[in-house]
Length: 307
Ligand SMILES: C[S@@+](CC[C@H](N)C(=O)[O-])C[C@H]1O[C@@H](n2cnc3c(N)ncnc32)[C@H](O)[C@@H]1O
Image (cartoon, rainbow, N blue to C red; front, side, top):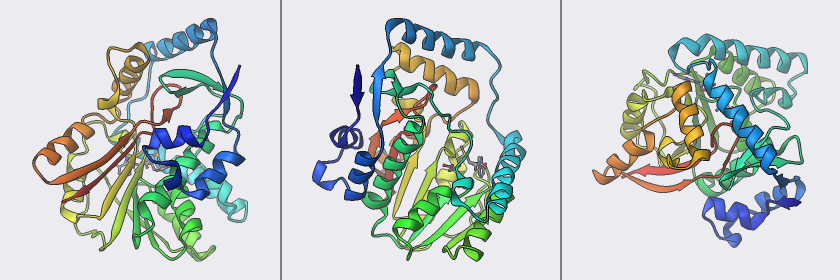
């Protein structure tokens, strides 16, 4: 039987009231197809088996050694972007799978639309743009890749300044074209999250965002966190898998924990934020587990600010 994810569901996931859910998000929820079916027992068993087989096989570890892979990946997007006469669709990363089973509400579901994952992310990102960043003058995305998130920010708020930081130089080349060819106020900057450049200052009244970038850092995020504490942005918003929010006594979550461990994905970040909060250094404003792709909930939203 078909079910659907509606405005009330998004409000519940994001911990917001319906009247505070931006009208732009409501429109997207109406326009997109968020219908899905629950899996049968057999389909669910097959999905579990597929995940377990994946965990038993070789999985590539994230880390320093993957810099060249990101460089090459974004170079491919860059070349296609140029060839297609600066078509922004060419900036969408290729790692989002079409037609795949999704993690939602504590279980696997089968969406009807092939674009379910990217459209779900689009609603979440639009919420973040309006709910958290409307009053800020500058936005900094660390680990921005092709800068497609910043392009979306720019579409809604063209008068802010945007900074896209990444260790891949192909990212900076894409951003330069966005500025020179399409007139967007997005500035690219080389930045290594493992060894943050303290001379790169965050301006006043600015927000920081990361999307699937800290994920790549395993437990080596401390220097970056110290950098943020020193720079004191007005707000930090992360859309990242969050190890501490999985319930290890639940099979569905336990498999995600094992996946994160095998890939060397983000671990200990929320724990460290909570320690900083108890030391009176920061305030955590929200942790919202929303949904995930097959292996883990990569779209959990964490919001905090320095005190
Ligand atoms: C999964 S991609 C996400 C990209 C983008 N935020 C998005 O939503 O499409 C991870 C990004 O983090 C960047 N990254 C990973 N490790 C990094 C590091 N140590 N310093 C800077 N960037 C890093 C990669 O180059 C890549 O652009």
